[in-house]
Length: 144
Image (tube, rainbow, N blue to C red):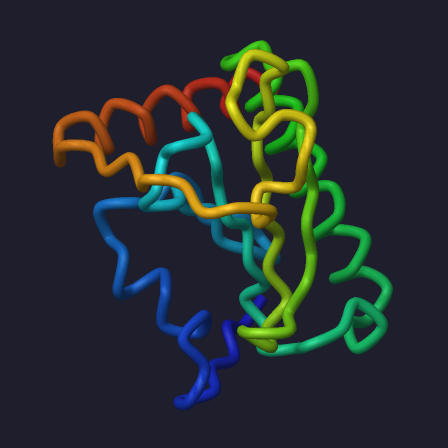
């Protein structure tokens, strides 16, 4: 698939901008680790094609991307053993199809509220810790 980019869209350049957080390039999307790891394993999976709505994608692309979302969620579940995986596709602030895939644990302070429900102190990792976490998720994906 050809990657289409829109210059004003921050998500279109995210793969190039966040090299340290790259996990995997799929056929229809890119997967990166979210910089804030308050929720361990929190990832962003975003469409290579600049579109704002799922219905804007052709059937093959939409189905392929949903398989990539599902594969990623299964890998995160196997690796982190959360109580739930949250799937969020909003686009109000960044109008580019991107999924927030968030492992959630009943032991966390924000459980069971949405991750946006109240502010939290960001968990920023070292470069080495980001590298290790990305590698762990990549290895879990390769098993799927």
